[in-house]
Structure formats: C-alpha cells, structure tokens
Length: 335
Image 1 (tube, rainbow, N blue to C red):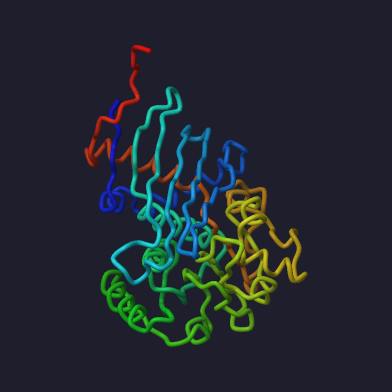
Image 2 (image 1 turned 120 degrees about the vertical axis):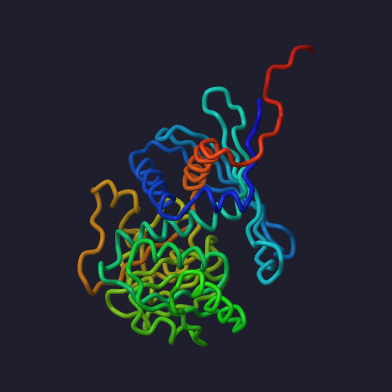
C-alpha cells in the first residue's frame, strides 16, 4: 500500500484558512453530537524542561476517519531555524487500518489552531469588532491575523511581543503580506487599550493579559498555553469573561488559564458555559449582549488535526500534490 507524504509547504497550499474554518466547524459539531472518540493527549515531558513529546489520537464518525498527531514541543526553538512544534499527523483508513497519509504537523497546527479561533470569533465577537490586538509575534500570530481577517472587517491591528525585533519584523512583514497597517507596541496594556478583539499567542508561563485592561464588549482568543502549569490571562480576566472552550473535558484537565483561577477559588467548573460545537448546533447561546466580554480558551484537540488531515488528503489527491511512498501494510505470507 502506498502512503502520501505532505510537506510543510504543501500543507500551506492545501489548507486555506476559510476552508479550514469550515472543516473545524464540521469537526466540532461532530464532537458536540457525540460522534467522536477523543482521549486526552498523552504528554511525555523531557528532562530539564527541554520540551515534551505529545500524542493526540482521534476517531470521528462524521466524516469517518482515524488519525493521530505526534508532536515534539520545544519552546526554546523560538528565534531559531526550528519550529517550536514539530511532528506529523498520521491519517489511517478506517476499513483496513492502512496508513493513508503522513502530514507535516507544524503547519497543520498553525493553521487549524487559528481557524478554530476564527470560528470562535465568528460566533462570539461583536459583528462590528475590528480593533485587533495580537499578543505574540510567532507562527500563531501570523495565522491568527489571517483568521481574524477572514471573519471580521479589521480596521486596526496592534502587535506586542517581549522581543522588540520580533514585533517590528512581524508588523512590517505581515502588514505588507496582508495589505494592512500593523502597529508595533511596547506594552500589552497599550496593545489592548480599546481593542475589541484580542488573540494571546505567546509562550508565557505567567499572566501577561490583566482583566482591568480589557474593554467591555471584547472577544478574547486565549491560545498560547495548552498545559495546566502555564497561563496567559490573570484571574480577573477569566472572572470577567463568559468562558467558552473547544472541549470541556480537556479544559478541566489541561488548561492553566482555567485551572489557576479555579485553584484560587475565584471560579468553579460552572464558569465554563459550554463548547463551540454546542453553539454551532444551536443548543447553547453565544454572545448575550454588546458589552459582555467573551473568552474562547483554545487547547487544540486531536479531532481538529484529523479534520485538517482529511481535507489535506482529499485536496492533495485532487491536485496531484505530495509524494507517494511504499511503506508496506499489505499482506505478508510465511511464519
């Protein structure tokens, strides 16, 4: 049996943002209908806090598919030639278990994470929201800018990073690429002042966004932290917001942005109003008023990687992209 190998550059061609947003909507509705088998991710931490190896398997009945993302997370790679998230998404046939595709995970993660934030923004942000603050200046900042432009008319963009060169480079390069002026600012507070859209996409371990800085009516996508030991938002920011998640079980076990305020006694499990898929299915209301603050806590879940890989595989076959290799998987005779 032959297996399709899809490189990082090919993923970028095969997974356009608007199509990915639609695929994420389908995946999260399938999750909401109970059509997905989704174990919690398994993480193997490496010594000396160098990084971690994570595996994220999923099965979906709609569309039918099975896959797993295997990814090495090395936060210290930021600013080097290496991505902080490196690995592959493996897509399997559900009839015989043959390996259909091996897809670069770095670009899948960058695009599908931003696409889910775009979906949450489409559902939860005010219709006229257009003043965007991006906290962070790496790969997720790049794709989140693209996702926000896909779902709202953006009139102003400010970017903050603790590294001045990074934020200046992002403002210049992405501003030119997207045809929009981007302001590079020196503090989080100045970045979010009067913003009505905020995306936190940093590697911060401790809070960078404080509740007292957030304007009424803002929608926040909290993305950077995906472990229980780190958070980007302080307790007041989470307390002030109506909280929605990609998956409740994952949030209760893995989300530092939620677990720290809970441990402090500031919020309980009922502070999680529900999942994005429930809004899509019409069983949960989204934004209730113009002035309320909405918060989408993104962890990134395996069914999103599976849906992205399925879309990539279909488009690669149609467009004759990728490289086919013989890896085995056929029947072998003998002892």
